Image (tube, rainbow, N blue to C red; front, side, top):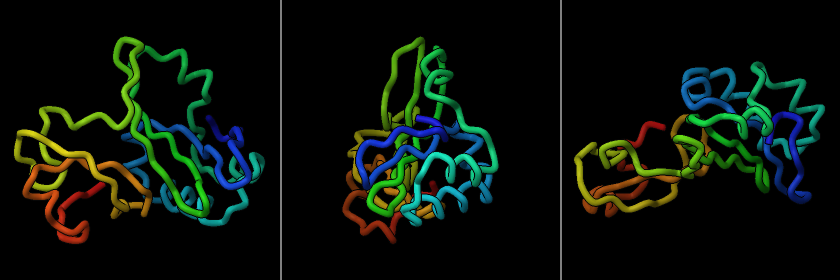
Length: 145
C-alpha cells in the first residue's frame, strides 16, 4: 500500500500510507490526495508523479514496531482514510482517542464510533463520540480532522 499501489478492483486503489502528523500538517498534500481520489485515474504512475511527498511503502510499514499512520484509499471516486496505530508490532485500526475523549466535545467517558466526512479533506473517517454528541448531526459536531 504505497504510491506504487495495489489495485483491489477497478474502483478502489490504495493511494498511500503517510505518518498522521505529516498528512494532517500539510494542506497541499491533502489537496493532491483529494484530487487523485476524485479523478478515478489511479494508475500507479499517476499517483507516484503527483504526490508531493514520498509515502511509506508497505514493506517499510511492515518493518515498523511503532507507527501512527493514515492509509489513504480511493474508492468509487471518494477518499477513505483509515487510522492505523502500531504499538510493539500490534496493529489497531481506527482506535479510540487517547484517554477516551469525545472527538467533538472532548469529554471523557463511554464513546460510540460513527463515520462522517472529514472537514479537512472530505474523506470518510471514523469519529468517536459521547452519547450527547452522537445525537447531533455531523455538521453540528466540532470534529476537526
